[in-house]
Amino acid sequence: MSAVVRTPVDDPAAWRGEDLAARNDWVISFDTALIAELDAALDQVEARGIEALDIRKEDFPLPRFSAMRDSILSALEGGLGFVLMRGLPMAHWDEARSRRVLYGLGTHLGWAEPQDGAGNRLHDVRDIGREFGSDDNIRYFQTSHAIKFHNDGADMFALCCLHAGRSGGLSRLVSAVELFNEIARRRPDLAEVLQQPFHFDARGQHPGGDRCQVIPIYSFERDAISIISKTDYIYSAQRFDGVPRLSAAQQEALELLKSIPEEPGMTLEFHLQQGDTLIASNHVALHGRTAFTDEPSSAPPRHMLRLWLTIPNGRPLPPHYADTREFRYTYQRRISAQPNSS
Image (cartoon, rainbow, N blue to C red):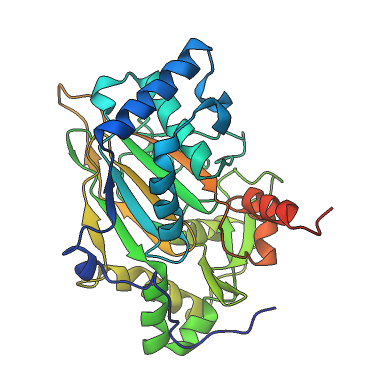
């Protein structure tokens, strides 16, 4: 088991939003040659009748994309922990074609993983007209609510904007590494608390049927930091019999985890435009959004497509990730890829 860390860590993914807001090196754009390559790959899979989820890397040849792919993977592991891809011509593609292109791009970055208990590998992020709390299985991405800082599953997520909606929905990113560092500077005792187990509500999505998963928020494996942060799900787990009440120290640590990203300078904020795809590590970055409005408007409602991907250069994961709903598939894939694995 890795030692408990109580001091700030040195990592390229430790950044402040105010510093990145003045830069654009985290934005990469598709040029006309890459768009033409995507169109050709799309024509091939459509001619063969291959649906999005059946696309394999060899079905979707993208030789020009290799340099961009390498830059993305380097940014996710060993860099800032995210990139924004800009310039996909979603306005000229129908929804089926857009699904194929996102999934096809994903096959060049890694392996798509299930995002829910049903095993779905491509999610629609949009308001389905249900309030969070109206059903124990409703998740925030299915509503128009503001979403607090959290991370998804697998090594990374790709969130592609098909339609931006009428108003709102500002995307927000914060470095989970710099967040840990701020906590360690101010309250090393609470940095230690965050490396101890918490009960998380699984929202009916755990493959094993468990109501909760009991895991730390921050973990270190071979000096690599990783986070699982869904504070609302920690609080909603308190409704279950048998779940211990949060201690005073745990509550204080959670409040610090929530409050620091709201301090001036910590968070990077931007609007995802039609054709933008945010790609971010689920180990070193947390994301959220402001509330959005679709109606009344003649514009199409806000609609994003989301992938969770395991990447080939992913970091070592702590053993307790093997039984989490977010990371179990990535953990299994990483273990099965090791030379001495059976």
